[in-house]
Amino acid sequence: MNFFSDFSFFFILAIVILGASWLGLHERSLKRYGLVASLFLLVCLFVKTPLQGLYAAIFVAISYACARFLWKAPDDKGRYHIALGLTLVPLVLCKVSGAFDANILGFTGISYVTFRAVQILIETHDGLISGMKGEDYLYFLVFFPTFTSGPIDRSRRFQEDLDNVPSKDEYADLLAKGILLILLGMVYNIVFATIVRTYWVPEAFNQYAEGTTVAIWRQVRNSVAYGLYLFFDFAGYSWMAMGASYALGIRCPRNFRAPFLATSITDFWNRWHITLSTWLRDFVFMRIARSMMKRKVFKGKSARLHTAQVAMILNMLIMGFWHGLTADYIIYGLYHGVLLALEQGWEKTRFYKAHRHATWYRIISWGITMVLVFIGFSIFNGQAALLVKGA
Image 1 (tube, rainbow, N blue to C red):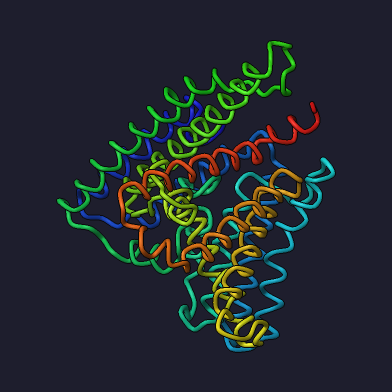
Image 2 (tube, rainbow, N blue to C red):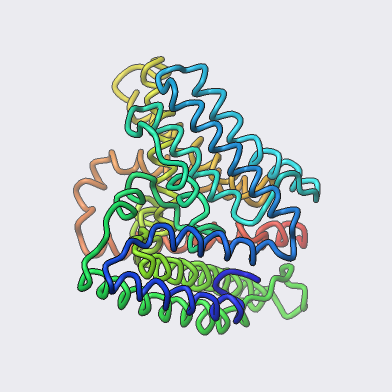
């Protein structure tokens, strides 16, 4: 069974929502019900791949042991590095082995679950979290709507919803929004994504010997079609995940906000896969930048700018590695890192400051941004590599 795609999943989801709605409308806590439902659905997810299920269970056990280990002495840097390293080991082994067509400790959803586990460790070390009940920790990690592909929630926000038992009217509003989001996601994922997918046909440049103009048109069409397909497929999944979360009383964060209206690459990442970009900003970029500033890697008037540029490149490069250890993903991360770094420099110019609010500038900026974004999608899906190979 696959989440948010199989009929069997939607059938079980409907039953889960019915049970949740009865509890919610009677002002009962949904915490334990949601945990049991999540564990049941994860059993269904891994029933055909029991080894993956075992890996998932091992990961949860290791991450919880690491969290408890750190909670005993949050300020201890040695404990922090040990806990962080052990929590990251399964993901690293999964990505490295995946590059060689193997699967060591890998399971569906490992990337997103690791982010949640790591976030708890980092915020514990920062003094923002003092600990979690074992039941709440388990629920946060195995929460089924966001288990396989996000959105990436934060433990403190999640805990607030767990501890809050909404009133009848408040839950009724959440339930109504949740059902609408599930329906919207189904339209995106099942209808729109299926339509645009028919126009995405990966092919080498000029492989049909129809002339250069036609070949260029085909590549442009494929790039746009893939970008739209990825958006409708992933955004649709995210809407459905949000909807299921709402029905369980959890206000899962939004993951997309009209990304194709972005007028800059920074604006694009503030609209596309929002929970990933904000997680990386808070837990990777900011820490790299602070470390570089503390060590005074760059000096002079442009020290802050150059620090931010390098931190952005490293941040997005890590994002590429997180997707997978393949050239396409790594180059995609580096590509967006360089674009963000160049954009930071551009925004310091007098021309930008003088014209950034002008309508003509925003229109041109939007056009350039979309070209760069869709080129990035071509790198991400391997189309660019196929063109180079074909040439």
